[in-house]
Length: 138
Image 1: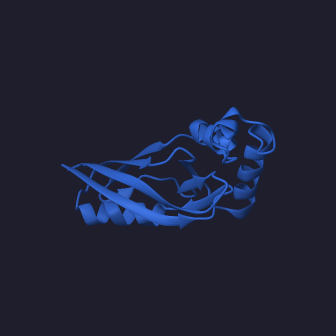
Image 2: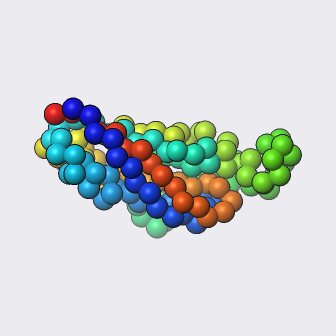
């Protein structure tokens, strides 16, 4: 059986990290599928999805890492093409990735004790975001 659902929410941009674990768990419960996998897909090219411990120090470290690895204050060819100043956000999103697959059993996500699902918005402005949630199993 396959169920496709969506999660929508507002973000602030600028490496805004949103814990979506409870929303994903709710979508699995709604589907009535007990065992399988859930695939999450970000619709948009300036955000990504991963798992992390949702702890303030680690989240700060995560944000600082992006500034060191893919800085916001250097020229990007994309910015010249469109003039929107978010070339760095596209590069960051492509590195993090637009999808994530997680197994679940007996209706519960198979996450570690300190592991949460987070959406990361790298864009340079706030926006409404959407994730496609595809649940497969029996």
